[in-house]
Amino acid sequence: MPTLVTEAFQTMGPEPLNMKPIFGASGVKGKRVTALSAENGLTDFIESVIMDKQDLDTPFCVLDLGVVMDLMNKWASNLPTVQPFYAVKCNPNLSLVGTLAALGSSFDCASKAEIESVLSLGVSPDRIIYANPCKFESHIKYAASVGVNVTTYDSTEEVEKIRKWHPKCELLLRIKPPQENGAPTNLSLKYGALQEEVPELLQAAHAAGLKVTGVSFHVGSGGTDMRAYHGAIAAAKSVFETASLLGMPRMRVLDIGGGFISGPIFDDAALIINTAIQANFGNEEGLVVIGEPGRYFAEKAFTLATRVVGKRMRGEMREYWINDGIYGTLNCVVFDYARLTCTPLAYTSKPENLACRDAKTYPSTVFGPTCDSVDTVMRDYQLPELQVNDWLVFPNMGAYTISSGTNFNGFSSSAKSTYLAYSSPIALKQSMF
Image (tube, rainbow, N blue to C red):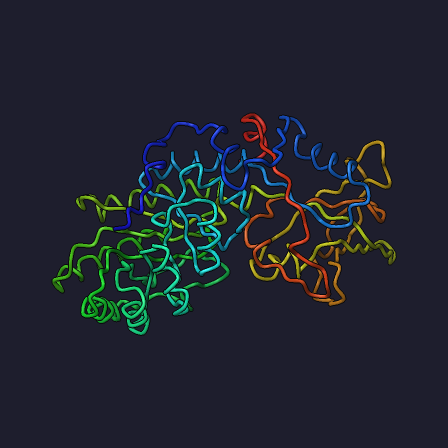
């Protein structure tokens, strides 16, 4: 029987977490983790990597484990009754996943490979939800073989596959929320049962001898209209009631999905979610509430450093080529509608002081390394005069970046290194929110 709520998170409470469990976490243990100072710590660390490896011609990332810890603290404080199931698809970096596991997170996996990855870190299968409403039959069989026993569905065809290959699996009915949160990508175009489809889907699972233990939804990834959660939670309560009217066993799981953004938007979302849960499920004993945050944990934890490999001047316009782009880590510009910012590190033009400060700026275009003109990272972005072998540093590069890169034109996305670091509490307060 899946527990869904781990003991680690239950005992965590609102108190600040300490870094010790992280250093011994799978994916982190045995690796060098550098402490960052409160003032210019991350910049100083990136500069030290550049200086130490002056012939480095590949981009690299820095994963700040202190940011991850701080975000887990904020989650536990703002949504104390919601167990996080980190969405591995957002960023499958093993150090990140291992850190989250050590801090009490469970995991949302969408494929056999993601399940294998999480299990390889020693995570128990009852801390995994197979949150893909349409699964390969071979992947369903694999989930059954390793004991991943909770999944989502939104069609009668999926019921038949699960009945055939994993009859002990518990189901969460994925519904289409009445309103999305204004995210650029409308997830309901692909998944989610309509209100009128709910009775048939519940009855199909019940007739197949499968247990439907709850409801899931997703209001969109990265949107800002948090009122969508109120309607979605009310719609989920309606499904609970429909199941009871059909004579099915009482449901106990509410999955509120992902798409959370850290910062004030998260605070607003948490307030609405807590209020909606109390209003709709306040009398529901034994309710288990889970969420599937991805970008919330990953986005701000990663910083990308790229090297300038080419330059061209056309009047006031400066054009630069860097060693990462739209087909690599910076694919988020296309797939995730990311709005990028960057900071220059002038290694060549000011070797005695890598950071460019108070310099005259010019409208600049930044291209990626491939031969495709689509590979344009930024247009008309104000940058100081840079030279070949200077660097551009991009913050907030952890969400839907590494996971979506390609090897187009022979530029391998997997070739980049990720360095581990952790911020002090003072540094976190200055840099995050």
